[in-house]
Length: 155
Image (cartoon, rainbow, N blue to C red; front, top):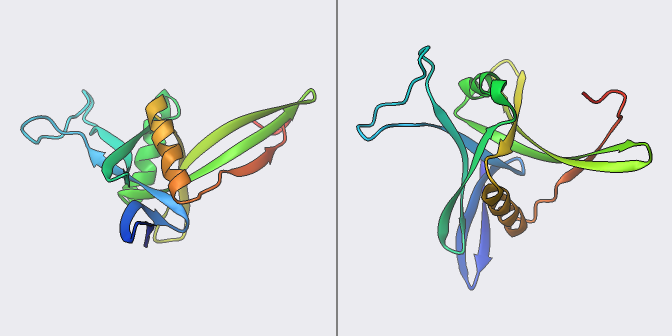
């Protein structure tokens, strides 16, 4: 595991934790004032998913949420393997009727002890999270990977 560092004015500061060139997203329990973890009516625990980093000396956190309402089950499966996962960011390009459409896809990935890759699609929770993630990517010179998608096979 490597931590990405940025040198500024002779000092070195950690921008964000990274592995294999990808940011690390962590799952953390959501707790009340007394330190008890929040729980749903059917007994499932509440978690938040975030990427922590430092920009201009300030600690920041980029919050992520599932892509859709049913997305918590795949996220639980991904993070049951490990409490941290790699964030993979791609730009899907679909050409339909002569027009190209771009869609940024955020995916968290982990690998279990048998070598099986577990992944789930996430999204930054708000516009400010997208902005912070873009700033972090600029600090460590990460480029979004473009991927051509065939519209006939796209869901």
